[in-house]
Length: 170
Length: 170
Image (cartoon, rainbow over all chains, first blue to last red; front, side, top):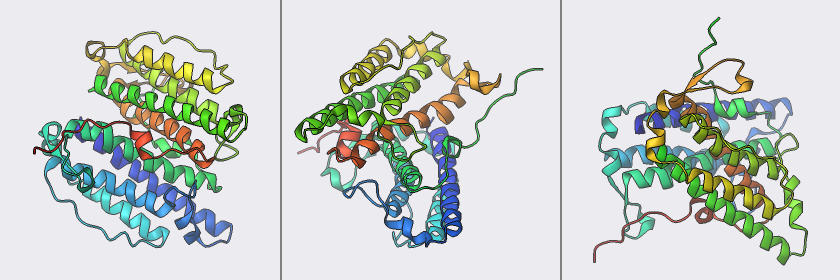
């Protein structure tokens, strides 16, 4: 199940890459600097677009690492442009692609902690379900919503991506 | 796994109820009609707040029904007030509470379709992972983001709710 869930997160990161590309083209068409998106936010006390993209990436990356006892590659959080954000997204897609179902065999029973939890722990199962998965969707949806709020032409199909559907029998 | 995932969706609907309560109190404190929230949206071609709440509810309700071969109770989509939206959320929490792990035993292999798919089908596993789960988080996060964008005081803890954590050994 974990492998399938990370497969879905990987797919959605691919959608995020397309939104970034669409945002870039939107700015070019409207003749404004695509770098403007970096600091846009939905509320003054919410995180700006660039941080939403970075945290989306980190949530997926860290969850895969924590659930499998691996060390996630560190990243500098120094992206300034849409191209740099796309490269960050691509790096996490590549990283998630290195995991197999076997890597997640003991994920549910892993013990997970974070510095900010002050010694508290969660089981891998609880951490993934209650923390990593909701956070991933929270931040990726904020990426989408910030772009939509600022006029970038995206729709639900851009969010979901292609669906694995079977055509009706003729 | 499905039972745990729906448990998480049920938990998050409980959080949504708290956001609605907070929005109501915010409006009362600021002396404006809480009904104003109903039509707020993040983009003119996105759905308004009330529809985001209704679709969050329907996504969870319909997914549980479709994966278990049950008929979901119909709802009229006629909520006008925050109280009515909270009742809608409560009804879905109650509905999800009627399912057990046993109900989802064959969920992965279920055949799912929707009128708008024009005869195409998805397996229960693909439908849940690629469609129901991302849509649920999309709409519930939009509920949150619309409120945050309009000044309601919510934070990440209100989004995630209480975490199942174990205290450090002393």
